[in-house]
Length: 125
Image (cartoon, rainbow, N blue to C red; front, side, top):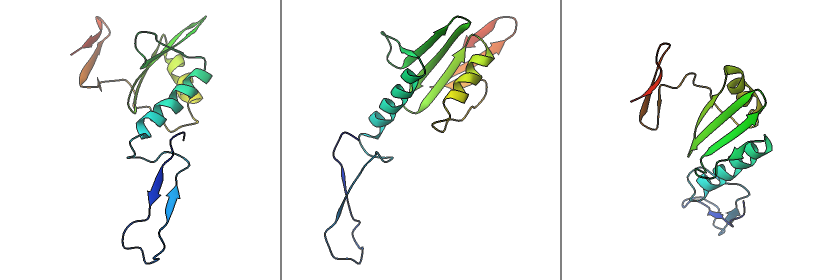
């Protein structure tokens, strides 16, 4: 954590010494937690040969000879797609360093409904 953060002991603790704890990593709820999460996720994706999109920093693309994998990020929500299911499966296998849940085929993301038809393809509502 590159930002110096200290945590004061909660009022009511029986030990009367004034004690502050120095944090070595981010905790949920801190101001910088979202930024630290994004930096960690960025570093992981870059180590897996993803490229960050120039026009949208929340989009990462991995191009290989046999297809592409695209990853969209919004805070702690991650949307993954690829040219085939194997690409998406490979992504989740590679990302085992952090806990991600594969929720299956997307039906809703950021308030947008996703509908798939074999005849017409994807429709966003």
